[in-house]
Amino acid sequence: MRIIELFQKAHDTALTESEIAEVNDYLHGLERTLGIRYEAIGPDRVVAALEVTDAHRQPVGLVHGGVYASLVESAGSTAAFVFTGKLVVGVHNSTDFISAVKNGVIRAEVTPVQQGSRTQLWDVACTEGDRLVARGTLRTMVQH
Image: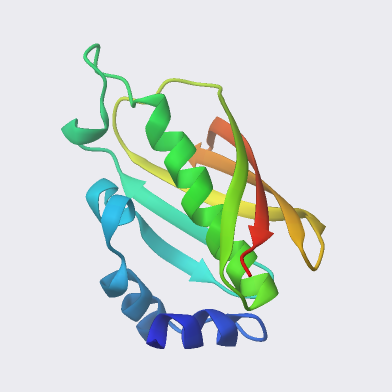
């Protein structure tokens, strides 16, 4: 599968714009439903983003907390795949909601905390503009 090849390539070098476009075209399931798009995928940096729409808002007009948790899970899992070169699954996601968002683009940037051969821990900062709006930690595990 081409997506696997791209993530394995990203272990050594950042993907080009056209390769990231390929990844974004491949996305399906919840990532596609939420409109998550990757902006950077490489050995030292993974950034994913989504533009807030009505579909992301709860009844009072704020972005639903599940959107942040899903963004943390998607971006963190991508970083784990890039690091390990193998399929991974999320085994624990803890996301704190810091500041409400009604509109804009939410970006998730992933930072490694612990990178083991079997499990990894990732810190994911979600921002809207210059504001930190959510922060999550994701524990991933290599799938055998």
